[in-house]
Length: 292
Image (cartoon, rainbow, N blue to C red; front, side, top):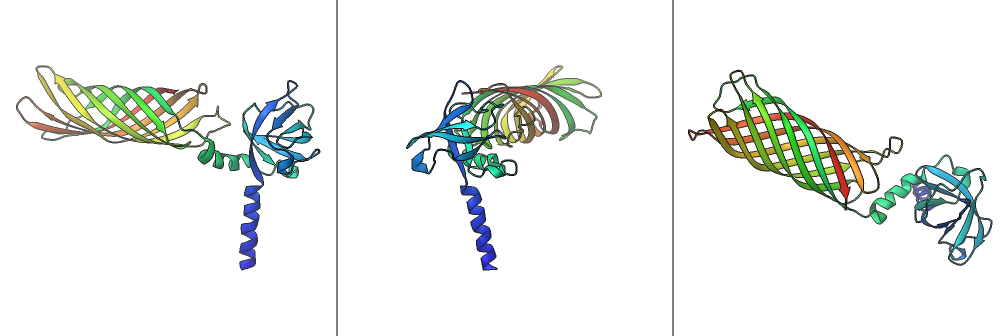
């Protein structure tokens, strides 16, 4: 049993270390040869064949010129141009016979997440429309209400790595509430914080990413109806959001999202009566993000 365990660990280690992350130093005008910064000092000799993979595209190349620190590679398929770009990080794998059975990109991504990826800041704006799902009011009879409105939000997002980020922002909400005998307007101005988790890219669907967000908020509310107004505090406890993020370019993203929120307002009426309203809202919206 120990021998089997040892062989399994040894095999797994060989699989991991057989992959190398390497920079493309240059590409010829013909798109048939490229240069990497590894040479005879790294055990590469003229005639050596290797597999190079990036973005799920793989090519086999042969070393045609080798110095101590650099190697010029020529791809074997003369009908194909090099699918890489200068300064791109690719995965090099020695065993060309495994070209179609291995997925070195999954190994590359694991190392890039922790060693190469540089977290960024971003500024984003949101516009969404909300609709009430349920509502309860203290010191008031249960009535049928219809609640709907819109929200403007602005956030600054800080990434920690490819998957985790936090965002701080401000939100303005305006809602119209219709009840059986009247209608009134409610406005809320909140400070928001969101924790976000981004899943890996969906390369087969426009390089989009799905993300989940959990948010909390605290601020002020103001309610106005004919001849009466009240104000107080408001809190989002919590907001759960799912986003579909689409890259427009390297520095711009667009998102479509849906969310469900629990909102509580505590206001003081004109006769000094305190009233608490608990809401559950749904909303859908669009966001634009600019990376700094």
